[in-house]
Amino acid sequence: MEATESVPESHPIPTEAWEDDEMREALAARRVSSVYRLLRRHGISQRQIAAMTGQSQSEVSEILKGRQVMAYDVLARIADGLGIPRGYMGLAYDEATQTKVVAAGSDGAEHAEEDEAVKRRRFLAHAAQVTMGATVFAVDSGSWAAASPATTPAPARIGMADVRQVEAATRALRALDYQYGGGFCRDAVVAQLSWGRQMLTASGTDQVRSRLYVALADLHNVAGWTSFDTGLVDSARTHFANALELGKEGGSHPLVANVLYRMGRVYLHHQSPDDALKMFQLGQIAAQESGSELAVAVLCANEAWAYAEMGNELQSTKLLGMTRDTFARADVDSAESWVKFFNQTDLHAMVGTVHTVLARTAGAGHTKYAIPALTRAVDSYGDDMARSKAFNLSSLATNHLLEGDIDHGAKVGRSALDAADGLKSARVKDRMAPMRAEAEKRKNNADARELTERINAFYAA
Image: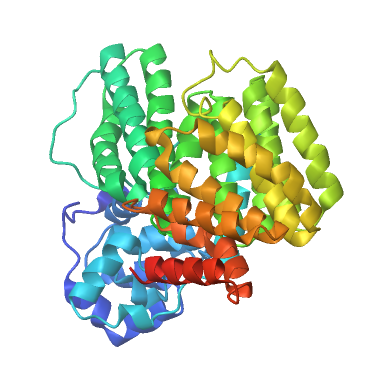
């Protein structure tokens, strides 16, 4: 019986325990029951295993009796909790561990990474559970990721003033992301999270804690977006998963919808419109439940983009119409901060972006809709939205090149490159790919050739 065990709960797991041949074989086969039984031989109690892995003692007992562990996230949590090198179980290293492995000259990079399609299916299942299922914020929900340990102590009891500080920091960090790119502020966002999440263990009223959940969810939302902007897809997915759980626990349907929209944009950016559409449609459920017309408009616009990438002109244009109608009914002024970005300027940008995609997939006639919409967006962006301005100038140049107005297209393209200069954003180069492709097709023209050379120099830099 567990109660009769006399082994101290702090009994350390010796490093050599993982090097034993029998243990290595069990780890390679992911036979967790065998791993646990071997740990018992080293004097590690069920209670200690449970504490280190975040499982209940009953779960540990069931595994010891032979229950298989198949879920990747649970396996990763067990490995990290017990201090097992992930590679011993054929698990992908997380971002922080990978850095340490490379620095130490380990062969961890040789281990197979988890298939991206599997990660997407797991995230979709998680998102569906959050959006349509019961509350998921609990001890076991930490399987996605735990915040990094922080050195600055958080208050033992929190009030609204503490939560407002998190909200203010999030607004400031989001503004830096818009203006300079995720690479400029991501580390600051993650650092703020490591401190902010400590407040989850602090005492406070139900009202304060509910607002804290939403505030931290939005901070995770910014962490996910800045991770995406710097090319860290797995990190983005982890932060968005945490944002979903916290947003659900805080009862914020608009924020859940916004997180799903952003995860869909990750997939859209990586040429997976089918997976993106699933995220947008799931987000639409949360948006409809929220009663926020603005949130619904955002999801409609992005669904239109996904359909355009899939070459479905009819559905794409239909959803653009729904976007305009819903936006016209929305109360932008009173919208929450995470969706308030979608104003008239962003509506023009989305209309122009969708028609730019359709101009390339369904016919160049769509440039007559894309050019005026993008022009209005570009003219309205200030320095605080430098990244969005660079994106839209690039799309505008693409449309002029498609229309055959090469001289003007090259001029706008040069403006796009000027706007992108200094931005800490991996996405900028990717979003300029269509402009680059159209310029290269017309290299017999001196202006197009000069633009191609500038783009290539920008990519090289």
